[in-house]
Amino acid sequence: MSVSRRVVVPLTLDNLEDLPADCRSCLFWELGPLIDRQPMPSDEAKLAKEAWLSATLLDWGSCGKLAYAGSEPVGYALFAPPGFVPRSMSFPTSPVSGDAVLLLNAHVVPHWRNGGIGRMLAQSVAAELVPRGVKAVEAFGSTGPLSRGCLMPADYLRSVGFKTVRPHPAYPRLRMELRSTVSWRYDVEYALERIFGTNVGKSLTPAR
Image (tube, rainbow, N blue to C red; front, side, top):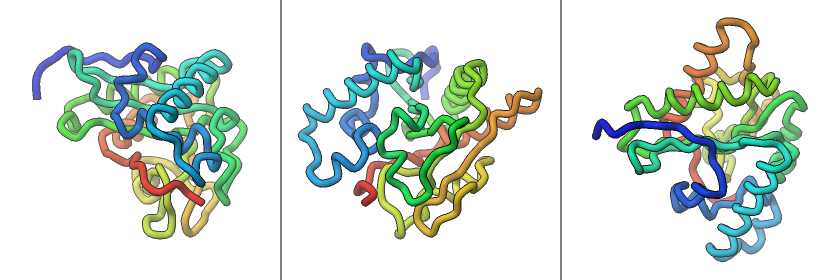
């Protein structure tokens, strides 16, 4: 691993192409069940993701973070209120709480894990959300063979500080409070760092 300068910047239309290739054309969250019956060609999917990001940036504000080591993109996080995420209404444990932001994906490339990138992303996400009055982050968990889709393992989310608020055998909904006390910084950054430091957002067959 090199000692290249590491920075975290907002995800924008200018750097969207720096997402991992599979994530760049994945519309699991952005278009929801509309894409399940007949997935789009890659070029169309990229345009649709660009349109989603543009609309979310204009209507809500920053909804993603991208980490670099030198000029190499090494990790990212994507988050938004449930109203901007069509897939968020398609789970049996929907809807996401009105005071929460949904964590869609979190990823650090394998050879950069355990190198501080996760902590940088965690700090950046927490610093973004708390001043905007966000009270919590929620996520739909996966229980493994019972569930499908671009989801994070429920057991893993629980292990880093999320709590189950709507149990389900395949798609539990979990929540992490962004407390306004002094302790939030350590707790939230530690939990998010562990998520970003592990490849828990994996594109599989979309949920039905």
